[in-house]
Amino acid sequence: MEGVQNLPPHLQGEFMKSLEQMQMKDSLTMYNTLVERCFGTCVSSFRSKSLDKYETTCVENCAERYIKMTQRVGLRFAEHQAMQQKRAADAAAGK
Amino acid sequence: MNFFGEKEQKPAGPDPLFAATTEMEMYTHLFNKMASTCFQKCASRKHKENDLALGEMSCTDRCVAKYLEAQEKVGVVLQKANEAQMAQQKSLMDMQNAMGG
Image (cartoon, rainbow over all chains, first blue to last red; front, top):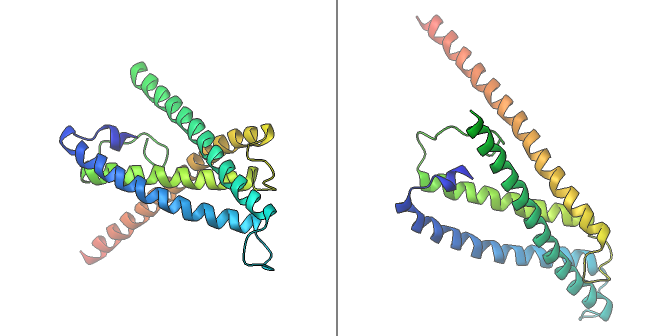
């Protein structure tokens, strides 16, 4: 994350604001994507206007599982980034 | 690390705020696509439980590792193609200059 780490201090406030806006947009996009995905997996018949018990459980479980998976992916991703930064730091120090 | 997975040189031109914001966007996209892909490949079956099974969790860990490795390899290929294209453009320009006199 060199671009982010090398950002001069006087620009950091503005960067944080952009970051916040990005995160807000991202949350809403994620919400819609998740709905589309879970609907696609769980709902396939249109005999009635409301979700039956099976579909409701499926959709709710789908959303929870997605969130749990996202958390796990985030954890592994952060580990990977940390390892890479360590390798880069070691390589730089080794010079 | 730039997005091709290689050591980045100090950027001379681009506005640092734009670079940082773009980098953050890139990482956000990467994360979203990775989470989405791994969910599809590892946990997108019957949602009978609201918890991830042990197998699904291992699958997720491996999926993340492979995805990031694939990203690096694709980055290397793109970098080489980029360099080849720039070399080609340069030789074309040199040729034109030589002919133009």
